[in-house]
Structures are given as C-alpha cells and as structure tokens.
Amino acid sequence: MTRIAFDNSYARLPDGFFMRADPDKAPAPELIKLNRELAVELGLDADWLASADGIAMLSGAAVADGSEPLAMAYAGHQFGGWSPQLGDGRAHLLGEIIAPDGIRRDIQLKGSGATPFSRNGDGKAALGPVLREYIVSEFMAAAGVPTTRALAAVATGERVQRETRLPGAVLTRVAQSHVRVGTFQYFFAREQTENLQTLADYVIDRHYPEAKSAENPALALLKAVTERQAKLIAQWMCLGFIHGVMNTDNVQIAGETIDYGPCAFMDVFHPNTVFSSIDRNGRYAWVNQPNIGVWNLSRLAEAMMPILHPDQDAALKLAESAVQQFSDVFNTALNQGIAAKLGIPVNADFMQSTFKLMTDQGCDFTLFFTELTRIAEGGTEDAFTALFVEPMAAQVWLAEWRGLHSAELIPAMKAANPVFIPRNHRVEEAIQSALNGDFSPFETLVSVVTRPFDQQPEHAAFETPPTLEQVVQQTFCGT
Image (cartoon, rainbow, N blue to C red; front, side, top):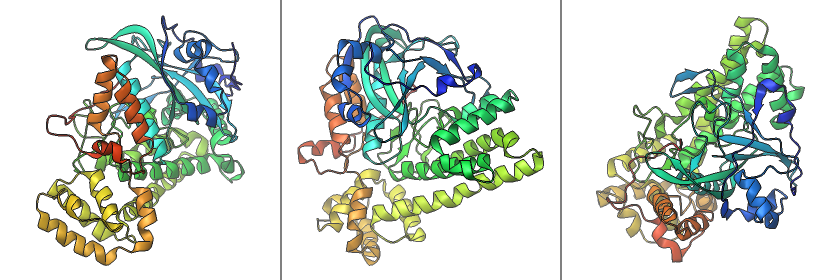
C-alpha cells in the first residue's frame, strides 16, 4: 500500500524529539472531502487518495508504506501558564513529502487517536472542529495568508464523547513543518542544549537555509522567525481574524497559521473582540495579537539563549535585539495592509481615526472594505452608508477619504479586500447540517470562501452579516 514517496527527516532526529505511535484504526472510514487541487499541487495521486487504500491512510485505519507515524514532543505556555510537556496528544505525523515546488511538507493526521502525550485524553476529534479547520485554513490559503492546509476530512465511523456523543472525524493537515516555539521550549526546560542546537540546525536547514551562512546562525534564525510572525499577525489583523489560542505551542516556526481551534472573523468591528470560550480575560483579543506575538517570540528567544552565545549577558542582549525588530516589521506590514484596503497611501492618523469611527458606528469589518472598494470602482454609496448608525458620519468620512484615494490604487484595494470570508454563523450552519447528515452547506461554503475575491452574485447571501439570532458569541476548542 503505497502511492506516496515519503522522506521522513524528522523521524531521523534523536528519539527525544518524538515518540513512535500508530494512529487508531478508524472502524468505518468514509471520505467527507478530498482537496484535489492541493493534492495535485503536492504531486500526489488524488484518485489513489480517494480510493479505499487512500482513505484507509487518511483515516488512520492503515499505515502506508514509507510512513513512520510519530507524535512530536513539545512544551508551551498556554494562556500564560507553563506546561513543561505537551506534545502531539491527538495527532500523528505520518511523514514528509517533497512537492514539485521543491518544498518539504509534513503530512499529519489530526484527531487520529491517543499518543504517549495524550494526558488521559482520547486523542480523537469531533466532526465540527475538523470541518471548521478545513473551511478556515482553505480560506486563509486562498486569501494569501501563510497557513497549514487541509488535504482531506474523513469520518471515522465512531462517536466521540464531548458535551454529548458526536460523530468522529480526522483531518489530514499539510504544513511546511509542525515545529513550534514550544519545541524549543521543551529542550530548554530540560537543559538539553545539544538537542536545542540539533533542533536549530534542523530548522535552519529546512526552513531558513540563508541563516546557515550568517555569522551567528541561531541569531539569524531568531530574527527570521520574528519577521515572519510579525508579517503573519499583520495579515490576520487585516482580515479581522482572531486566532483565539496564541499559545506558544501554537506558534509555528515556519511562519504559517496553525491550529484553528476557537478562531473566528469579526462581524461588527471592535478592537477588543474575543470569541474563544476559554479566553475569559481577552488575552488573545484582536487588538492584543501583536503584543502576544512579541510575548511568544520572547519565550522563543529565552529558549534559544544557550545557543545564541556562551555568555549569558551577551546572549540576553542578542535575544532582545532580535525580538525588538518585531514592532517595526509589524507596524510597517499593518500600515501597508490597511492602506491597501482603503486604497490610499499610508496615513497613520487617518487609519487610526477610521478604526475609531468603525467602532463607534458598529460597522461590519469586512463589508466596510468591500463596499468601499465598490465605491472606488464607481458604485453607489448606499450600501456603505447603511453600515453606519449615523449615515451623516459616513458622508463626512467619505469626503475625507476621497481626498486621499487615487484610482491607481484600486487593483491593490481589490486584492486586499475579500468579498467573502467564513462568517461564524455560516461555519456553524455548515457544521450543524453536517451533523444531521447533510454536507451540501459545507461544500458550498468551501467553494465560496476559496474564491474570496471573486464577485459571486449567485452567492450574495454569503456576504451578509448574521441576524441577531444568528450571531455566534463563542467558539470552542476541539478537545
């Protein structure tokens, strides 16, 4: 049973980096959705993946030739609290492939059963969180945000116990890597400097080869990771995206968005918006994401200090200098991103006043920019004005905006403003329908949000914010 050319570099690292573990055998696997476009991108045989043998691999029911299933070891700060050992408690890294673009990628099953890191959990995933991650990660990819990808969703044919008994499912996740900030913390906490150096060398070889020739490769790595994270979080902010669980074990070293648990996109704009049911103090609110980004990277810098310089004081200065660049990179990326959304040159004062206006007027975040783009292209102002509690405030703002906007910025404006996002109520509708056996709303939503910048008149209803009855107040972690 093999149709995948696995080449498993992580499995060749020392044993302390992972523990061997086979997925649970799904009793009655059934394919929900295969991402055929991604399969082709990866150089995989989509027809084989959709076959009985392929579905067996994608569900954990069988281990393909060349696969070396393992659970990765890592630690992490979760909502600021330290956990010295976390690890893959419900995921199995099947192995790695080298795609036609030359980039090495992990193939991982999520929700595939208990591992030595499960901490008494069942290691399973319910159907809802699997569908949510599929929808949101594929939207992010289509919107140009670095992200893990969803290759397949498979029903396992068993029930998992959460608040109630729910259908089980497995997500096949594709990522440039599953190494996290928490992976570095794991070895730092154990004072395993040799493994820390091995990990840094591995990450440099795989993701940051340019750092290899630097005077201090570990420092170059830390700076490069900081830069990628700063740009990534700016992209989240520009989409009104709230990750929800920015713990250090959910910060991926390659700079991709990972772990779509209690994530959501804002409808009505407010900087302090939180959706996660477990984020009771707003630690990961929309506006706090850059500050948490710095905090998480500071934990990475702390963990890397033993390999930055043999002298502790010198290592501390180097660590601080690397993390301090976050603010400049983030602010530049965010300012450029918001300016593109507005179709104006960078103007910090105007952008700040725009966000205040949107908050005061209760404007829908996505529609504000979508309708503004339509105005820029010659459309009417009615739909834009209707977003405001006070229509006159819209007119005053538009007059100021027209003085800054120029027509040559319209292409960039269109490329920065998705017409469609995975609105929370639509995701919930798709999940509830699937739980009742109807996957057509899920299929439709995936189709719509993976063409986020296209005008799709037949799906205009998907642009619409929720009614009061449809508003989703909280999202939940999948465990």
